[in-house]
Length: 304
Image (tube, rainbow, N blue to C red):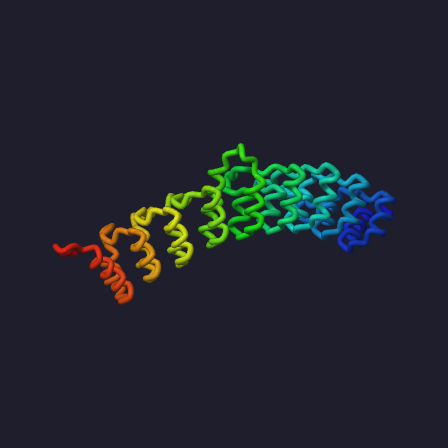
């Protein structure tokens, strides 16, 4: 059988997970490092994506290259980590696979595992000395931020508790906190606050994070930020305060939270909380604002 035909048959055998046939084809000269598909993948990656450790072992025993990447820069171990295939990770690590290498987007195997909620794979990597990033990359991603934005609290705790205490990771924790807030992950946000996250951080565009729960119309998340020191009178890129934004989305519950925390009802950017409530014709919001005004006015009265 010609070499090209052997290679084609080997690809089919791996797809079909026919280990016996694959072994026979390899014995007859099929190339275990045959490239497949439009993304420059290979047979070891294919076996890994099929979660077939027996096929992976056969290929490795016959010279398959562990660190041959596809067009995205992913190795077989990236695929195993992303899929939560611990047996495949263990096999590759036992063969001295490099588990800390990032792909073209800088994603490491542990980042894939953390972002996909694969707790046991993350734990295995940490127990076997695979280093964490401890900082975000140019895309503002790390193992911690990826777990936080998906709400994987067990992984978040593991990553925080497994870190080197000598390394200052406050910047990473604040980035992770921002991801948690933007994605509405309140349980993760609570955890990060315990590890020093700051409630007054800003987004990449410079907007205070307190605006996120207002846009999401999430009173619990807003209360969490306010109770941990978020500035209720800060302003977004357009000059609006959180209170004005709360009124714009017609949420009197959010407005009450902000007012009770000391939001300035007189703050203005050509408009006020009261003028917006009047323009919207929202009686509930008008009551919230006028009640706040009444409680603040002294015996001399207030002018509007």
